[in-house]
Length: 268
Image 1: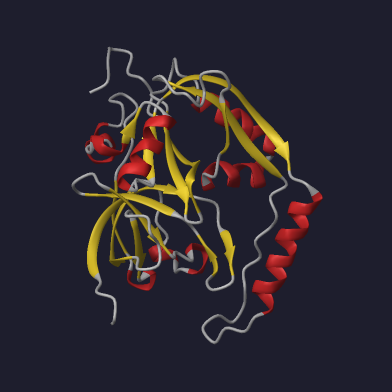
Image 2: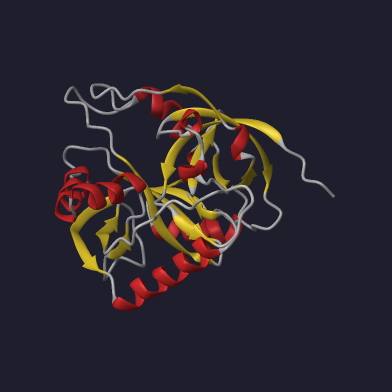
């Protein structure tokens, strides 16, 4: 039976760094919310192979034909026809109002907002929740960790596999360089969490913008950028979390929410 696609209007809030894919050459995990504030995951998106007119930025409204994925058990996952994606408009950030226009949609639905990883995982166990916004209570460290020779070898083997396969619809493959470092955030949740009560969470940040900054301008600069955004005294800093298709109990940082805290008082 053919999949039934419907055109969705969605606001993008996350793009992870491209991953090599045997089937799609490479894909970018994309997080978005619908107009009612419910989160969705768009896949597959061969972002760098799309035309410039389709390459969305964070906080762009798009329309795209999508169908609930039949092969992905996560309820937020939708298969899309990326070749039919359309850019609609960009929602600008206003540093004086705590990103009010973006907040209106991204934080509209409280069902995917949590004060702890423990609460997010409980929702995953009960409802299958695979995406969530978690508010940190303390940031303890931002650091770089160098990847191992084994990780480099695995990446290069995968790249050789992908680039050597024939594709009638793609005349060439775009080079995707190996990233030699991970950026890791060490933090504790804002609410009681059995996982970080004694030892803080220590997670890789998969956000494309941050990793591209490291690749382009240097990893120390990317680390400093991450540390600046994670300053809880200056930013309403929250973490966009997503789990992995083959490891549903494991969540990673796929994006960040970081409007400046207005000087006049509390956020809307």
